[in-house]
Every structure is written in C-alpha cells, then in structure tokens.
Length: 531
Image (cartoon, rainbow, N blue to C red; front, side, top):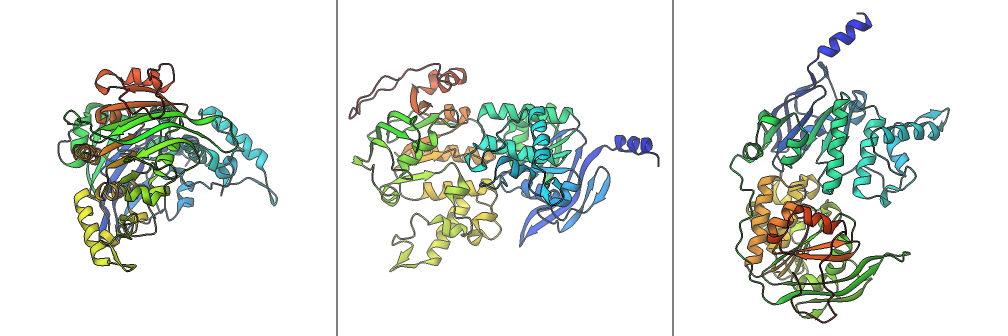
C-alpha cells in the first residue's frame, strides 16, 4: 500500500483508543467488570466515577501498569498487547499519574529523559536532550528550571515535569489522572488551556477527574463508571452537571451545604504573634499570625498555595516547633508539646498529603485506623494489641464512611484508591475523641457523593461543639462551609470575613494581597476581633 493510501486509512480511523470488555480483578474485588471505553481521535474524553469506581485501574491497564484478566485494546484501530509502560510509550501513550512518578533527587532534565536518553556512543548527549525539552517547554508554556531538583519544586511545577515527560516521548494519547487535585484555581485554569491546545493539535486526551465543572469546561464526551461497571457515555455540552453527578453515584446529589447558624462558645485554639523563618532565609514564611477558633464554629483559611498554609498547620499540629509566638490549646500553652500530647488533649489532623503524612502505605487499613490510639486501653493491654477489637472498630468505620477495599480491614493502605485513602484518614481523625479538627484539603480527590458526606460530617462535628479549622484551595468549599473566613497572603492573615457578606471576587483580592481588613491584635487579647 502506498504511503498516501496508508495516511488516508489512518485519517478515517474514528477511535484512537478502544478498550473492549476489560475485566481486572484484585482477589475477589472486580475493579473493572466488562468495561468498554472508546475515545475518538483528537477529543478530550473524561472518565468519571466515584472513588474506587475503577477509573485509575482502567487507565493503568491502558498504560501497561496492570494486565487485564480479559478484554481487548485497540490503538488507532489495531489490536495491541500492552504489557508494560514501555509498550505504551511505543504506541505513543503517555500518562500523568495522580501521585507523580518522579525521582526527588534527580534534576528536572534527568527526570524527563530517564529511560529515553539520547546517546553519543557510550555517553549521554545531554545537550541534545536539553534542546528538545526547552523547545517543548516553550511551545506549550510549561517552563520550569531544568537544573532544579524535583524535591525543591512546587506541586504544580512537578506536574509540568510529568507533562514534559509525556511530550518528550512523542505521546499522542495523553492520560491525565486527577491532574487538578493539588492545584490552585489559577493553575487549574492554565492546565485546562494546555489540554485544549493539545486537542487542537490533534492529540487525544483522556481526563480522569471528580470535578464536574472541569469536565464541562474542557471535555467533549464523558464515560461514566460505577462500582467497576460501565454505565454510559454522554455528550458533555448537552448534559447538566446535576445529571452527571446523578449518573456517577446513582442518586440525586445535594450540592448545597445545609447548616444552621453557628453558636460559638469558649476559645479552643488561640494563636498569637506566630512567626517563622525558613532555615537560611531572612524572609518570614509566617508573619505575626493571630486568630482564635472557638467551640462550635468552622473557621476556613483561604489563600493561594505557598502562602504559609502548610507551615501554619505544621506548627499548630506539632510537626514543626521552630517558631516564635504563642499557641494555646484548651487553655494550655502547647508550643513545645509533643504531637502525641496534642492528640491526647483532643487535636485531630487531616494532613494535606495523604500518602506522605496521612498513612503508612504498607500497613493495613486496620493498623492505620489506630496509629494515633494503639497505646490506649481500648486497643492494647500490657503492650499487646487487641486484634479483634481493632478489626471490629475498623470494620465499623469502613461501613460508616463507605471505604471501599478489596479485603476490608486487612487491605494494605497502598492498594486503596486515592479517594478511599482520604476517606480512611477522615474516618480515623473524626472517630477518635477530639474537640479540635484541623483539616487540610479535606475533600482532595473525593467524588461529589463523598464530598457531600464529608461536608455534612464536618457540620455535624461543629454542631457537637467541636472547633473546626479547614484549609482549602476550593473557594466554593470555603464559602459553603465557613462560619468565618480567614485569608492568608505571604504568611500573614490579611482578611477576616463573613462568608454571607463576601464573594469569590472579593476573596480573590485578599488572596492576591490587594485588599486587607484585619485590625492589629495584641498578644494576650482574646476578644472577638473579626469583621
């Protein structure tokens, strides 16, 4: 067949990807149960489903990380066998994983070219590699310092490295697995533009996300999975967000957060004149921070990522004790208290990075559920763990919080989907005795049904009389949940707002540092000082 005839045949191929009747099991769990996915050439195709619905598993089969038990994969109309990621790369398939696959101690350039290095004889030709990567980064607006070490990059910069890895390998089919879970609204908007640019160039995009508004913003079609099974494929422009949510979870979803007026009582947490410098730097990463959180209220902290949120939470929870200022919890100065003492005194913490700080991934779900209580009489006696009590406790939480796993309480945390890992942490921290809940990005990676449950649970926590401190990049979450909103900019609290009297535009002005409204509070002054 002549070259022109081959091109003509290729141009007539409707589907870039066909995954036909794919089944993948893990023990008795059907992660994918006879699932079919067809993705047209050049389209942005979303894959939507609840946590644990099988989305990431299906994409891992396409990328060669898993081998399907049965089913057929076709690329551009040709049946193929993909046994590993190298096979996927040979078929021009690239993937940005939900949890990045980067080597922290390698430079950006080294990560991008790893496994696909250009050589001159026995030696690497880094100069030629650099030229190609620089051309790609400029072409797609993905500039990042090629000589920086990955461990020193922000999350959004690391994501750019992952995308450049795909492009460097000449990927034409691009898989994005929950790409916006850790990005700010501004970074999300930029990524959406990049995806549209890819699509306009003829690349095929598969987007896994729980965020329905993002699907409406960029996707052409959407395939919906539920509990490992194929439900339907819809035309996105003609389908409402509410209908997508209903198809995903199998019921009508309430997007509103119903809550009565808060009735704040005594101060549970008081932060005064809190400041912190990073090692070797003069600039303050926390600058004279002052606020109170009272029993029976939800205080939400809004701000663009990198403005001191992580450092503030680390200081309050005891992960960092190198600071100046005062932290009073339940009337006691805890500036030098251990993490265990803070936990025993009633502090619960949902960390922003569930894998790095929230779970011991090689431990079972049961072991993770009692990591902050294993030494208590309920779960141990004379240093011996009460295994049946731990299993019963964990199974109760699995049912109550709908944590989906292959082997129940005995499942390794690593094998849970990202959303179910988040639900496990949420269950552990809200089920144990506490009167202060600190939640950093509590709904990160959760589907709309799980978000609805988490929001209702947080409101119930407040109504029980607990103090709640939520750190979130999701402005809808902030305005829906908060009884009071604090805004942080360059390490300083620059605004204290009533959610009923503000909007996203005004919040954005505070987050960018162009507006401030917080009067100075003197150390030791615990009077109400918020607008």
